Image (cartoon, rainbow, N blue to C red; front, side, top):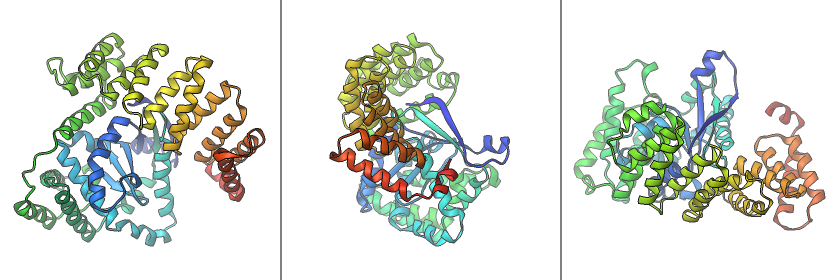
Length: 450
């Protein structure tokens, strides 16, 4: 879920107006990420990719866009997720983008390394995504791309040959997973309608993925002979898509718009979910809790409903009451790092020494799953600091400083942790890694990164 307060990091400054126009936010959410992962994992496997190796990133932007960059990293605009009319459409886009990764189309970025800005642009994207690998899945970090935005679009523009190759790969993956390519054709038809618009009004996907008549005809011809053209989407994918759209819309649009779109007369799961979020954001907590309690009663095994209830209570000053629903969400989905960090934060904020050990254990598991989770490391330093363990607190702060490229701070904190902690075990070895990395870093790097 999304905490709407965001941290704005200005990377380049041209003018206030330009910054406002180019603002982007990276967000984390357990349910949305798991939905996308469920859609994409079969495609990755069909392409010979390890699903765990492909990192998925969500960008808050109303436009239609998805792209791959920096190796096996796939980025999605929330506009694409919300505006896609079916799971099949989104899966078709994912299949196409998977074709770019499997086809080695990103290798040309290495050839472009002669352009001094190339590596910096990709690193900027990935650095921003790492910056929001944050604990509860509800913290977005906004990033102003500024004047580099156009250069980034140019960098990620594919040739017609690459687009055709990705299309051919996409339909092969859809065939291999027994899914229809109708969704991909529907998406192409949406893009085709935009080609008549002036460039500034086109969605980024149109400008970076050139659409041709031959490409559209290829998909149509494929559908005429594919045995899976009329294959029905998996029922669970249909509901997951509706819920994802409703959730994103409710968190990213004003509550009044959500309530207009998902009217009180609509008793569907996704409509009640959206209204619960809208009332929580207004805030009208009583109405929000009544809706989420009804959903939990209907779906007691749904971890995301319990997570939302925990967030509602936590952020409205009912911290003690938030622990139980957060704990239930982790019980129902024990492998999810974001849910663990949500529960850990709730436990820490109770200011009860008896709860600190549980929080530390949760955060240790979460950072093992997501070593680049900034909020998890920050909370770990707090949990150990309140428990009087200065060595572990310093170590956690050193990990956080490394992720934030604060080289001098990381070196100092690692040294402090080394002096205070036993010289054995995995933590001590990691401290040596941090010291070595920071000692090798140039002093100017730290100043520049600041």
